[in-house]
Length: 203
Image 1 (spheres, one colour):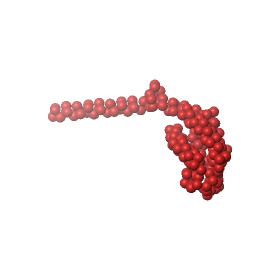
Image 2 (spheres, rainbow, N blue to C red):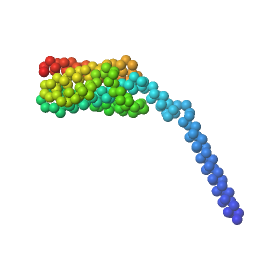
Image 3 (cartoon, rainbow, N blue to C red):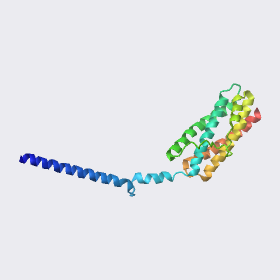
Image 4 (cartoon, rainbow, N blue to C red):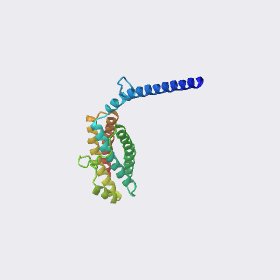
C-alpha cells in the first residue's frame, strides 16, 4: 500500500514537472516572435521591404507582357519561310535574351509578394510600343520580304517603348537587380534598333 502511494506521488510529481516544462516552453515560444532583439525572423521583413518600391513592381508587371509579346513576334517570324537571314538572327537573339528576363521578373514579383497580373491593363495606354491585336494578325499573315519589313518596323517601336519603361526604372526604381536589368534592356535594345534600321535599309 505504501509502495503504491509512493508510486502515485512520484507519478503526480513527474506529471506536474512535465506540464510545467510544457507551459514554460509555450510561453517562451510565444514570446519569441514579438521580440525585437535581432532575431532573423523579425529583422528579415524590414530588410526585404527596403529592397524594392512601387516603381520596381510596375517595371516588372509591365515588362513581363511586353517581353512576352516580343517573344511571340519572334516566334511568328521564325516560323515563316523566305525571311531575311539577318532578321532571323535578330529574332533568335531577341527571344534568347527576353525569355530568361521574363522568368527573372516573375521571380522578383513572387519574392515581393506582388501580383504579376495588372488586371488586364497590359500597358496599352502607356506608350510602351505594344502591338495591337490587329498588328499581330497582320504580322502573322505576312510572308517573305513583307513579313521581314513588318517585323523590323513593329519591333523597332516595341523596343522604343521598352527603353522608355526601362529608363523610368533606372530613374525611379530602388531594387539594384531590377535597375541593372533595366539598364541592360536600354543598352541591348538601343543596339538592336540600330541593327534593325540597317536591315530595313537592305530589304
